[in-house]
Length: 507
Image 1 (tube, rainbow, N blue to C red):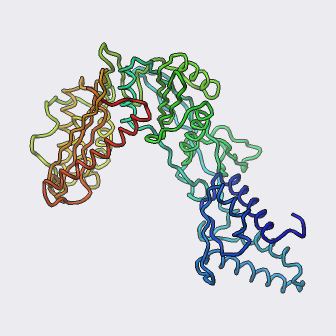
Image 2 (image 1 turned 90 degrees about the horizontal axis):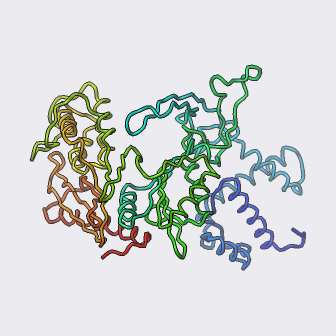
Image 3 (image 1 turned 135 degrees about the horizontal axis):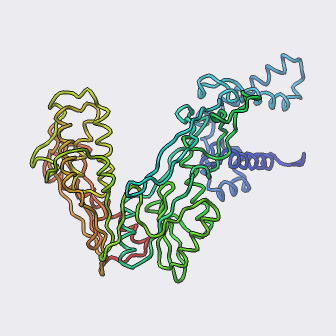
């Protein structure tokens, strides 16, 4: 920047450098920028930059520095420390710029309450790791492989230092059932993929250190630690890093993210459309052209270590079987692993009975209860017939009683007698959506909140269902019904948005 440059040009140049620094070092974008109403901030060049960058520029009112209090206080802090350094060193004020640089250097290394009174340069510490061994089985229960995996002890990580954002979307089960229904009706090929050691492909944006793996320590340098460049199983940010890595690659191949479900990626051409559904390291690929599907699989295998398991048959513990009139979705093996020697029953709950937290004696072993109802909750992916009663039993995990445990055991006995029950995805010549809803007014005996129940069919295939308590008490049965109707309508609106992106015409 030349010496005779105007103040506005200097400010604009410094802001551009700062903007590039933030985007490169922190992998984020500046969303809002607060300043006073100085002419250097209101120049055409500065305003054009923040406008094209999508930055919301906030300007404080004239003579109201309180609106920009954070930067004003920090500026005051830097100036006072700068003057103190110059006075202590008996240096003239003409060296203020060097003193400013030294001041900010020192402040950036001082202990901060954000890191529990530690300096950012001493806040990092090496995370421990361990080896995890397990046996992976096939859908029929036979041993598939023995796996050994190095896992970081992510529970020792500190938010804001070792990681920031952790959320990683996965495809909704409603989306999976909807896409499968469309694929079956149009006789598309449906392929199943699995990415080996998926999390190891993610690139870490944060600075993370880990101790040397057990059994692989360097005895000559025992105090040396590992700096991680790629994500590792156990790290809090690993799922997000892997999702970002995979979706970025698919976007480069011409896919776009669905607005209804960000784990559904769609690639449309003039003569074909291909869908990719991502659930962590499990991927379902389907579409019009088998050639496009094979090409996509080959491209994925060049970039990652991908197993092609052929036609969809076992996904997320769900057994998928081709039948003459569609697909058969079941969790038979999962159910059998849950059951012991119990006598079967024909109903999951006594008709008309409702559970209360005030009934029975508290259980001594609450862990078994919580583990069992958690397992049952996963089983509702293909068993809507137990959705309502499982929802009831899940409400008492804090303090389960023997009455609640008896209800859980009855569900298990019902499952024993209904192992063959499953969801059928069947083709339909006319795809229409039918939604049914009902409400149990005051259904919970403890807080008198009503129960919402609804289900949605696409053609003849059940694709969505739920049973849950309403957030507040309804003062009439009509109010409870209207709330249920609103929840069902919201689900229907979302499904219609999904159909729009799938290019499905609803009759």
